[in-house]
Image 1: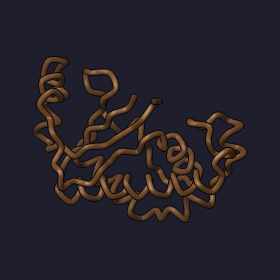
Image 2 (image 1 turned 45 degrees about the vertical axis):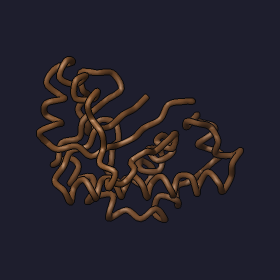
Image 3 (image 1 turned 30 degrees about the vertical axis):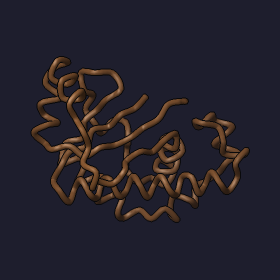
Length: 154
Protein backbone atom coordinates (compact mmCIF):
# COMPACT_ATOMS: atom_id res chain seq x y z
CA UNK A 1 0.00 0.00 0.00
CA UNK A 2 1.28 3.49 0.68
CA UNK A 3 0.17 7.08 0.71
CA UNK A 4 -2.07 7.89 -2.26
CA UNK A 5 -4.00 10.91 -3.50
CA UNK A 6 -7.17 11.16 -5.52
CA UNK A 7 -9.66 13.80 -6.66
CA UNK A 8 -13.39 13.30 -7.22
CA UNK A 9 -15.87 15.81 -8.61
CA UNK A 10 -18.64 16.94 -6.24
CA UNK A 11 -21.27 19.63 -6.45
CA UNK A 12 -20.63 22.87 -4.62
CA UNK A 13 -23.68 22.17 -2.43
CA UNK A 14 -22.46 18.68 -1.49
CA UNK A 15 -19.00 20.02 -0.72
CA UNK A 16 -20.43 22.73 1.49
CA UNK A 17 -22.51 20.14 3.36
CA UNK A 18 -19.48 17.87 3.85
CA UNK A 19 -17.46 20.77 5.26
CA UNK A 20 -19.97 21.71 7.96
CA UNK A 21 -18.99 19.25 10.66
CA UNK A 22 -17.78 15.70 11.14
CA UNK A 23 -21.24 14.06 11.20
CA UNK A 24 -22.23 15.72 7.92
CA UNK A 25 -18.93 14.79 6.32
CA UNK A 26 -19.18 11.16 7.45
CA UNK A 27 -22.78 10.90 6.24
CA UNK A 28 -21.86 12.46 2.91
CA UNK A 29 -18.85 10.19 2.38
CA UNK A 30 -20.79 7.07 3.37
CA UNK A 31 -23.44 7.75 0.73
CA UNK A 32 -21.28 9.28 -1.98
CA UNK A 33 -20.77 7.52 -5.30
CA UNK A 34 -18.82 9.31 -8.04
CA UNK A 35 -20.38 9.53 -11.48
CA UNK A 36 -19.08 6.81 -13.78
CA UNK A 37 -18.79 9.35 -16.60
CA UNK A 38 -16.35 11.53 -14.65
CA UNK A 39 -12.63 11.20 -15.29
CA UNK A 40 -10.58 9.21 -12.83
CA UNK A 41 -8.67 11.56 -10.54
CA UNK A 42 -6.66 8.78 -8.93
CA UNK A 43 -3.00 9.84 -8.73
CA UNK A 44 -1.75 6.80 -6.85
CA UNK A 45 1.65 7.59 -5.28
CA UNK A 46 2.66 10.08 -7.98
CA UNK A 47 1.48 13.07 -5.95
CA UNK A 48 4.90 13.88 -4.42
CA UNK A 49 6.69 13.62 -7.76
CA UNK A 50 4.07 15.87 -9.33
CA UNK A 51 4.37 18.30 -6.44
CA UNK A 52 8.12 18.39 -6.95
CA UNK A 53 7.76 19.11 -10.68
CA UNK A 54 5.00 21.70 -10.22
CA UNK A 55 7.11 23.58 -7.68
CA UNK A 56 10.34 23.29 -9.68
CA UNK A 57 8.57 24.68 -12.75
CA UNK A 58 7.17 27.56 -10.64
CA UNK A 59 3.60 26.92 -11.82
CA UNK A 60 1.84 28.41 -8.80
CA UNK A 61 -0.13 25.16 -8.41
CA UNK A 62 -0.30 23.80 -4.89
CA UNK A 63 -2.02 20.47 -4.42
CA UNK A 64 -1.92 20.65 -0.62
CA UNK A 65 -2.66 24.12 0.72
CA UNK A 66 -5.29 25.33 -1.75
CA UNK A 67 -7.94 22.92 -0.47
CA UNK A 68 -9.83 23.29 2.80
CA UNK A 69 -9.52 20.34 5.18
CA UNK A 70 -12.77 18.52 5.87
CA UNK A 71 -13.60 17.58 9.45
CA UNK A 72 -12.51 14.01 8.64
CA UNK A 73 -8.80 13.25 8.49
CA UNK A 74 -7.47 12.58 5.02
CA UNK A 75 -10.09 14.60 3.12
CA UNK A 76 -10.09 18.14 1.81
CA UNK A 77 -12.39 20.12 -0.41
CA UNK A 78 -11.65 22.34 -3.38
CA UNK A 79 -14.30 24.98 -3.95
CA UNK A 80 -15.37 25.65 -7.56
CA UNK A 81 -13.39 28.92 -7.78
CA UNK A 82 -10.14 27.21 -6.73
CA UNK A 83 -10.89 24.32 -9.09
CA UNK A 84 -11.41 26.75 -11.99
CA UNK A 85 -8.22 28.69 -11.22
CA UNK A 86 -6.14 25.53 -10.86
CA UNK A 87 -7.67 24.04 -14.03
CA UNK A 88 -6.62 27.15 -15.93
CA UNK A 89 -3.05 26.92 -14.60
CA UNK A 90 -2.86 23.20 -15.34
CA UNK A 91 -4.19 23.73 -18.88
CA UNK A 92 -1.42 26.24 -19.52
CA UNK A 93 1.27 23.90 -18.21
CA UNK A 94 2.19 21.11 -20.61
CA UNK A 95 3.91 18.14 -19.06
CA UNK A 96 6.98 18.76 -21.20
CA UNK A 97 7.54 21.97 -19.22
CA UNK A 98 7.45 19.95 -16.01
CA UNK A 99 9.65 17.20 -17.45
CA UNK A 100 12.44 19.75 -17.92
CA UNK A 101 12.76 19.71 -14.11
CA UNK A 102 12.76 15.94 -13.74
CA UNK A 103 15.91 14.97 -11.86
CA UNK A 104 15.71 11.40 -10.52
CA UNK A 105 19.00 11.69 -8.61
CA UNK A 106 17.91 14.83 -6.76
CA UNK A 107 14.40 13.46 -6.22
CA UNK A 108 15.77 10.31 -4.59
CA UNK A 109 18.41 12.26 -2.65
CA UNK A 110 15.88 14.63 -1.07
CA UNK A 111 13.42 11.79 -0.46
CA UNK A 112 10.60 12.55 -2.87
CA UNK A 113 8.05 9.83 -2.20
CA UNK A 114 7.95 6.97 -3.23
CA UNK A 115 11.71 6.96 -3.97
CA UNK A 116 11.46 5.11 -7.27
CA UNK A 117 13.00 7.79 -9.44
CA UNK A 118 16.46 6.29 -10.02
CA UNK A 119 15.32 2.68 -9.72
CA UNK A 120 12.60 3.00 -12.37
CA UNK A 121 14.37 5.50 -14.65
CA UNK A 122 12.28 6.57 -17.64
CA UNK A 123 9.35 4.47 -16.44
CA UNK A 124 8.94 6.82 -13.48
CA UNK A 125 8.82 9.82 -15.82
CA UNK A 126 6.08 8.06 -17.82
CA UNK A 127 4.30 7.33 -14.54
CA UNK A 128 4.32 11.04 -13.71
CA UNK A 129 3.22 11.98 -17.25
CA UNK A 130 0.22 9.62 -17.11
CA UNK A 131 -0.85 10.81 -13.69
CA UNK A 132 -0.41 14.46 -14.64
CA UNK A 133 -2.77 13.87 -17.56
CA UNK A 134 -5.32 12.48 -15.07
CA UNK A 135 -4.83 15.47 -12.78
CA UNK A 136 -5.39 17.94 -15.61
CA UNK A 137 -8.40 16.03 -16.89
CA UNK A 138 -10.19 15.85 -13.52
CA UNK A 139 -9.63 19.56 -12.80
CA UNK A 140 -10.68 20.71 -16.27
CA UNK A 141 -13.76 18.48 -16.18
CA UNK A 142 -14.80 19.75 -12.74
CA UNK A 143 -14.21 23.37 -13.79
CA UNK A 144 -16.30 22.88 -16.92
CA UNK A 145 -19.17 21.70 -14.68
CA UNK A 146 -18.54 24.48 -12.11
CA UNK A 147 -18.03 21.79 -9.49
CA UNK A 148 -15.84 21.35 -6.50
CA UNK A 149 -13.43 18.51 -5.89
CA UNK A 150 -13.11 16.14 -2.99
CA UNK A 151 -9.45 15.36 -2.35
CA UNK A 152 -8.50 12.18 -0.55
CA UNK A 153 -4.99 11.83 0.81
CA UNK A 154 -3.65 9.04 2.91
